[in-house]
Structures are given as C-alpha cells and as structure tokens.
Length: 323
Image (cartoon, rainbow, N blue to C red; front, side, top):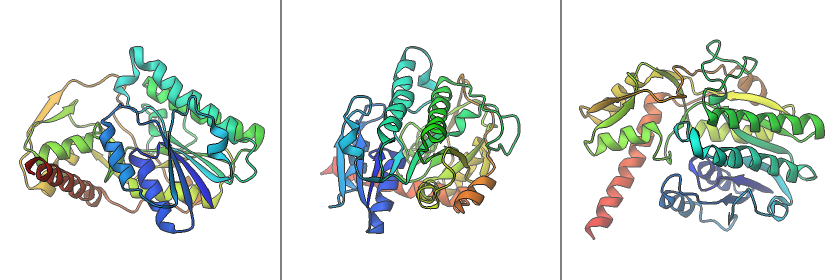
C-alpha cells in the first residue's frame, strides 16, 4: 500500500511519515523542496529519522515537478506542504504564499483526479481561516474571516479541495489545525523559541501582553487524525476542526514552562503583530463524529515532550561542538 506525503521533511509531515512507517504495511513516498524558510539542517535531521526501505524521498518543487509518476498508485495523499507564517505573508512575499499554498494545491488536486487507487486526499488547513471568530468554541459552520494573507491562502486551498470533491468526487477532507506543537516543532514557532530560550537562560520574546488565548494541539494527536481521515473516509469535501483541548493564555504557557524547566523566565514584551488574532478555540464535535477522534495529550504533558526533545538536541549540539 502506497501513500504520498507532501512536506515530508517538515514538522508534521515527518511525524506522520514516521508513524505510518511503523505500521509495517505502508510504503511512503515523501516529497519536499527543502526551502530555507527555516534552517534546512532541521529538515535533513527529520529525514535522517525516516531511514527505511519503505520510504522513498523526492526532493522537488511541487509547483513544477511532474506529479504523475509520484502519485501513481497512491491510496492516500497527505498534503502537508505549504508556506507557513502569518508575519511574513504581508508585502512582497505574498506571491510565495499564493504559489506554495494555492497553486500547488490545485496542481495536486488536478493530478489526483484520475487516480483509481485513491481513497483519501487529506489537506492540512489551519485555524487561521477563522481569524477573530464569531463564537467559541468555533465550529466548522461558522463564517471564516482570515486576518492575514496566510489565512486567506489556506482558505482558498481549502475551497479548492471542496470544489474538487463536489465536481469530480475526489475524496478530499480538509483538517483545520489549531496551533500544533510537540517534538520536531519548527524553530520559528513560539513553543520552540520559548523552550530553547529557557534552556539557554536567554530572553523570551512575547508579542503582545500574553493574554491572547490559543488552542494548542499536540502533533501526535494531529497525526492520529490524519490517519483516521484516511481510514474512516468521511464524506468527500468534509472540513473538520482539530483542536487540542488545551485553551490557555500565552502567559499560562510561560508559567507551565517555568514549572517544567525549574527556571525563572526572562520575558521580553514586544509589539503585537498585524494579523495575529486574540483567541482561537475550536469545537471537535465533528471530528468525534466523523473520525472518532478526540485530543488525548494535555498541555503540560505535551510541553514536557517538546522540552525533552529540545534538551536532547541541545545536549547533542554541545557534545558535537566539544569534540
């Protein structure tokens, strides 16, 4: 059985690939262009953890590569690739977001149309499509109102997935991720920055006053939901929240990190960034109904798992420096 994972060298893609390979009955084709949005060494480290006879890696740009041979025979396509980041989506770099988030998704959907083998096309959407939502917990029927160009491109790609389901019967499902964290998290994301700074006794930059509320979802729960979206086969075109059940303020996160690390944190307050919303939090009733999924990892347990992973990296880096 063959599955294809786009963005396979990234945070979520590599965790998904690792979990699928451990099943023992799946061959994984991973594709990634290894862009430098964050250090490529991080992605290469992720790929090193996927050394397996049943893993085939393709280093290519999804915007230009011939997708036919890559997708041929695939039972599932997990589209995890995309250009991340709210802050950088403003201004001149917007074209990168439209290409990597919208055009690439359209190319994949078009290439997948005639795959007789395909059971699921799982698209990684984002809670950023909601913006400052009308209600909390936000349900999939609430009106999307993205507050950043990034959110606009994620919503556009999600609409494409739904259109291909309705017009061509493509078995798409869009999963709206609410702030994913855990081992392997990108270095530009808040928890990674906070924990690294705590480990190294450095200042912790916080945008805004820290009262903003986020719903955090552990990567292991996200991986499980992706696999269930394939195996449970919900109605083509479905859109489903994946919200982790840990609705806390940034300040509460910092308190938890202080407790885990046993350190007094040096927090530096910075100006709020345009496009950042005050609150996120999603209803998971539909995920429970269609996927049989509920988040299983609480914020303290999840933060500790990421802390231990980063502590291991920091120790390995120091040892290699001292050799």
